[in-house]
Amino acid sequence: MRLRTSVAAAFGAAVLALTTPASAYAADGVFSYGFNTGNQLDQRAALFNPPGKQCITLKLPNGADFAYAALNRTNATVTLFADDDCSSDAFYVVPPGKAAPKKVLVRSVLFSR
Image 1 (cartoon, rainbow, N blue to C red):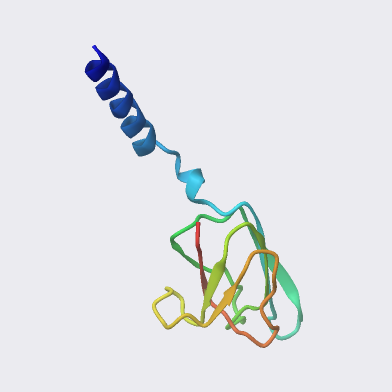
Image 2: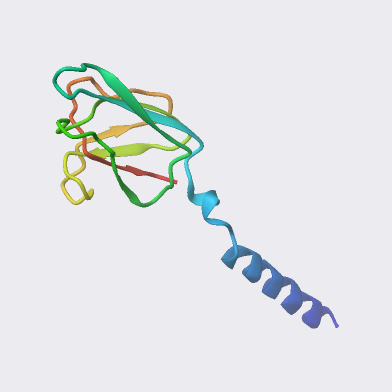
């Protein structure tokens, strides 16, 4: 009887682990970054509760080549990349609650959770 109960409990735990919602792999908080398009300097954009463990190409308007002044107000570490698909070497790592130097240029990001 105990074996059957143990097996049922293990099966239930496995089912719960496999059905964890994707939001469990998201960073809680806001990641913001600056950009300029020539005539309108120092605009800001933000990602709210960004997904974790997947590359995010930052949305930049026409005329903006890179983002800069990244501010990580999430609960996850974010890695900044200079290319669009997080395939280059990690360019800069920003812990939760910290900012990258304004001169660090970025095009894509990857959150640790």
